[in-house]
Structure formats: structure tokens, C-alpha cells
Length: 75
Image 1 (cartoon, rainbow, N blue to C red):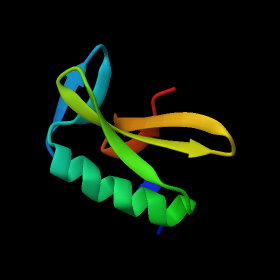
Image 2 (tube, rainbow, N blue to C red):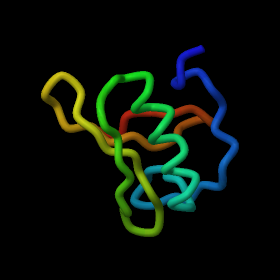
Image 3 (cartoon, helix red, strand yellow):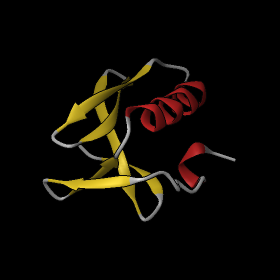
């Protein structure tokens, strides 16, 4: 199953209209899952009061948050 179809049941916060992970640990766990699927490094970054996943896909910097209990690209 793709990581993008897995439900995200971790606590979230809303910041600037974006749903982000509430905790750094939860974000790091999802970053590891996403990195394994994409085959590229994925880190976490603090955005306001929450945490987003950050990586580079095909030469494009990307950030992911949550939408409807699924990972969603923010950019």
C-alpha cells in the first residue's frame, strides 16, 4: 500500500490554512515511511505551530502536510 493511501491518525494542528503534524516525533515517523517509498531523503521542518515533511522529488523541493487523514503535498 502506498504511503499516500495510509490514514494519518496522529494529532494535527492548523497553521495558515494548512494541516500539519502536531509533534516532531510523529512527523519524523511519517518522513521515514515517505522516504522509503520515494527513495529520497525526507526531513521534517517546523512551520508555525506544526511540523511538515520536506524533500526533493525530481529536482523539485516539496513539502507535505495532511488533508483528510492522508498525506498531501502543500506546494
